[in-house]
Image 1 (cartoon, rainbow, N blue to C red):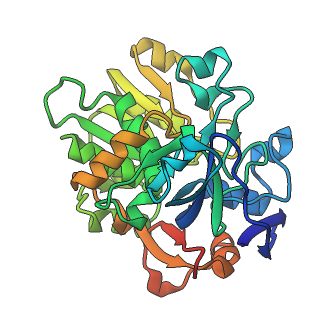
Image 2: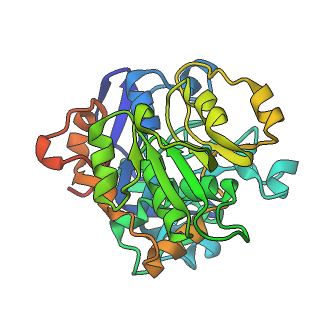
Length: 341
């Protein structure tokens, strides 16, 4: 099969590899679509923190946002999935430790992360090996573009949940989302569907222009932010100063969800959180949010597909990772890979 492999910073290509052989409790998925995200770019540049900690190493086959059809099975448990369109959890816990047994496999110390951690090959390939326990069925209403956006959507959903904007309160609570990239925009779409009064804070006119094209009129840069504080904030940016900004803009008693990661330590005066009685939550992974995200997409409550600028083949993956985009792709932040092209 053909697969895209990164062998070092800025070094990658498409290789012919042996297709995966499923073992007990495993299936082979023919990949229909895979997304490229910021984590993948960090592997391309060499800045991914797991490369420094030893939790990942080159060569690496990226791709943790995906959908496809089960075409091979290692046993009867997998055979029940044959022919089913699926997506899956990125986080593969050991299933034996206390964290896994309590439903927190995404925090397992010995976890694999598909296409990211521990050497488990990712979805930028024609076929992908996946444990049955990580699979989720995809209905026909969630097409290939939406299917490959379930994983980032699950992250966004968990961030929205953490803000409490839909937990037994009147609709219209003011939610500020810092960073109108893929996760920020998906958070905005999900929060709007749940009745929140959504505001987006960005740095460039390009990103804000695209947010407005999705119907978000309340888009700001720092100097144009409206007066007043926000009931909830999602920090989906990569800026080292955004955590402190969120703490300064949150209403006392409000909630902040931190899902963005900066390349350097963020500076946050925790006295602001204490004196405002703020609830702050860190969000790692889509685990626990995938099934509800599929339901939102399939029901049409959230349409994530406009955030995909283009779908290209494996041979163009390196160009995408290097940030070279044709102008005709427009301002949408996400690019998808179709491994069969």
